[in-house]
Image 1 (cartoon, rainbow, N blue to C red):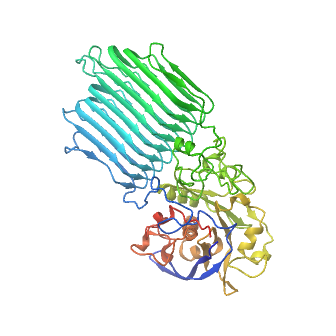
Image 2 (cartoon, one colour; image 1 turned 135 degrees about the vertical axis):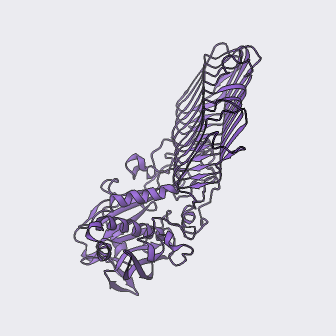
Image 3 (cartoon, rainbow, N blue to C red; image 1 turned 180 degrees about the horizontal axis):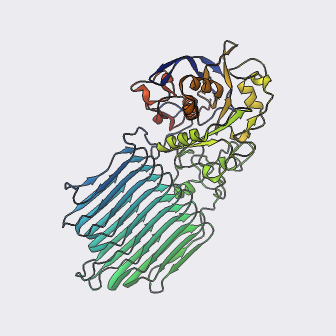
Length: 631
């Protein structure tokens, strides 16, 4: 491991001005090799990854935001004409776009493209009773939560819907339903990647009752969509075209994949009596079961081609008897154990292509956790020093979790498309745990930037966080001081304690940052221990060890805040110091802060009173592609 710089926050003086406390720090730099269990791939800093960590431009997202939340509602009264565009926005929480009640004989275009959203993206275009062309485009968005696109209950001459090249940390739902179509409908859902579940529903779209029979063209193109963990569900149901004119319904579903099941239901569609229905379903893959049903459709002629679709545990294909065209079920291919693995992460290129991870980068989301697993000796089995990755077992492709066996409950599974940061927090007996309110506010802040912060304060079992560390610590920390720094000899400083302690699973090395809440922190300079009650926090810089001094923080709060507000103030300051020190672990500095210093908790004089945020200089961008020190 490279030399780790240990940085402290030292309270030199306290100023009380208008009820706001400002710490005036002195900086103390110490070098140490005392990393907890070696180099931590979650240590980070800088704008580009270092050795061994190839940046994947498909999923690396910038993280400087201009808006907290956007919710817009467009209707005919508020519309000034032209195109409705909500694109290129950077939103911390949710972006919601609703378009409704357009009732004039005109064209309407809605574009929601290229946004970066920390929460959910919701696009609802509905109840537009009389339009010529309606075009809806939702593409190139990168979202920390779910994407929901609904185009429904509109009456249009021509309908065009495109949902393409979006990435979501959780799921995607695209619904085109109950629209009345005069001439043509074209729906494309292509190139989307999500972690949990994708649902695509095109249902109940019909010709206007009593109108001339002009709805003669319907095209649906669903391709290159990938779900890493769960199911891909496709429903094309009860769409009804013209009765008399020659109508053509064309449905193409190909090159889609899912880590669990793929379900397809193409049923109850009508182009009858003189129309044609073409259904092509090919080269779709899933790890468990594929269910394809093409049943109950009516047309003059129905052509169904189902070819080269694979499910590891078997598949079911049912096609209506009056269809013409081949139905092919081949043996499943994703159970192969010997196949190219270009990035060496234990997942075959074929499997990674299926679920949407990068087959040439072992860490698709650049968060220091492999997609598959670390096969350090190349024997294709997981040994005692090797771990499953973010997706899991590379042989059976069932999720066991890298941190699989290290994290509980299930909500703390890592996300293979989005950044995860794990921290274990223990406390010296007699001190409190990290306050729940502090944890909630920290997790919420990281979530805004599509980073999932996992703080184990008691959910990891007996070898996990939340442990009251043994009472007799004098050989490590003296009576009340945690010694942060290297002292020659065994069992006399923070690092010796971490390496020897019994409340730590060694498999967490290189995955978890480690935090101890102590009464006070002693610093070390040139081999000399400096006992002070003013140091409120300390961390390796970069590294994976940090500490908070609860009694020092309480002393600081007692000087400034009235008794009534002290509990809340202590919680806030604990969160601020924690985030500051974790920033040092990830190689963020405090001496280069420029611009509006009040906006970043890395600025010493404001760490406690500033918002919980890494702002300057582009600090959130610096911690996404985490630096991995493999020296």
